[in-house]
Length: 268
Image (cartoon, rainbow, N blue to C red; front, side, top):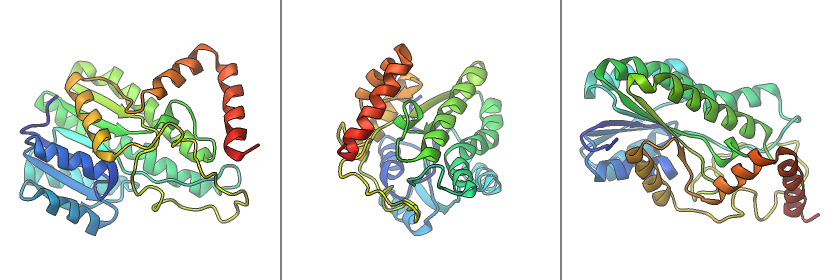
């Protein structure tokens, strides 16, 4: 799919990948780019950077009713949604020490938000002959995230949901891509929720940044290329494909390697 002459909705568009993608869509001719973010001022800033072909909207992607309202309002104001980019997210270290509501919150933002968006937009897309879902997951959704249990679990679930949609709605005109990058220069660190009970220091070089940190603009372009080719996986870090293949070929060896990598990051 080409985004020229399309109506595009981007969540988490107030900064980082979401902002970069929204701007690129406008540059190549999207009819309207609806920039949403939990931080309304940031969403408005992105829309102002684009100009007349965009508007900013406050949206909490953890609230399914809010997503439903947004979709209904956009379809009434701007016409049918052609592309829905489910991108919002945050980071939080921790595991068994985190309370269940913290795990549930990450699932709402990283997984159930994709489900809510699909429920809201797919019926209209199908009625109009098709549409595109671009869901941001993470390399953690194919591999894992060692310092955050809920991040790893929610991103795995996000990839699995995208797979399910891609299988079951392809023949009805729905195309799906899922973005699985490693480290990207964004504000996710600033938006992270810290675990107050954690005692171990964070490593200076993190798991995700080990293969380098990409700029958000480069990731946005990778997403647009994947959409043109209708490729499911968007892997702006090519190393991720190699790691994913190693995992599939010998799971136990991969787990052993990840434990060694964990110790290396900790300086053990």
